[in-house]
Structure formats: structure tokens, C-alpha cells
Image (cartoon, rainbow, N blue to C red):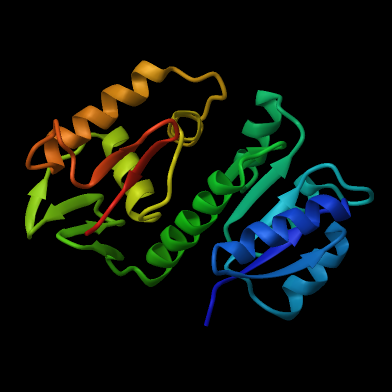
Length: 228
């Protein structure tokens, strides 16, 4: 059975767009047009993740988070908002949100965030070592250890984040802008930083880093992780 995401937004156009993004990632989705409606749905059933708008009439997103966490509901929450102020981001995370994305957002970026957060949440809930297996690679999302043909490959924190993103999205193309936004959390891209970490990762996982088999360039677009 597919994981289910609760989408909470009072803008029908945004709600529809989010619904399409979630469905295109192989997940199920339900919608709520207010904080009050969302809390009613949460009292009736459980969800694997909540996508929550901040600016809503009546109960705003921050109030909804406080009620949800006050009831000890541990469902992961991603705030989706037009607000870009650092204070809002920090406040949302401080009161219990797990991640934050601002409008306008890249659908591929959002889909990747949603799937990765659901996977991490399930791993921490079961207490089991959740593993991603792709060809010769195994990645343990609890211990943050990567193995190739059962040999461990030591990674830095940023390399861990990058390989996790790619292994969760085999064959999906990520532009440099998307990688920088997701891994560094900033909109202004430092292309050199992305290239440095792509090259470092290739040095560790490729037989011939100058002719990468797994972490490939897609001319004019970006990068993708391929398993043959």
C-alpha cells in the first residue's frame, strides 16, 4: 500500500499542484482546505507525511503544528509557504516541523524531500536499519554508511546527504540549482561547491572517476545516478 500525504492549503490552485506532485511520485494524497479540517482528518486516520501551508485563514500553519505536536502526533511535517523570512523558517522548525520549502518550488525537489523524509521517519519509528539497495550499493539510512559490494565507503556529511538523495531517486535528473537548494538550503547557487562534491563522490564510488558509470552528467541539464 502506497504511503499517504495530507496536503493542507486553502489555495485550490496550489492544493491541486501539490496533489499532482505527490501522485506523480507514486504516493497517495488527501487534501484539506483549512487547519481545522486537517486536524479533523488527523483525528480520524493516520498519514505518512503532512504538507502544510503557513498562511491560511482561521488557524494558520504554525498553530496547526503546535496542536499536532501537542497531541504527540509524530507525523513528519513539511511547511510549504510563500514566506521567505529566516525567522519563519526557524520558528516552524523550532515548534516541530521537519522541513521547509518556499513557493515557488521545484516539483522534483519537493517530491524528493517528501520521499526521503517518509523513509527516514519510518526507519526511526521501527528502530530498524533501513537500507536502500541499488545495484552494487547498499546505504543504511540510520547509520549513514555506504557499501559497494559489501565494502564500506567512508563519506563526509555532505557526501552522505548527496548519495542519499541520488539513491532515493535513481535515474532522476537534478540540476545544479536543485542540488544546491536541497543540500545547502540556499537559493543562490555556488556552482563550484556542487562540482567539488560531485567530484569527491565520484572519486570514492567510481572505478574510473573521469568516465563515471554511476554518477553521470546529463549534458545541459545536470546529474543523475544510474544503475545498469
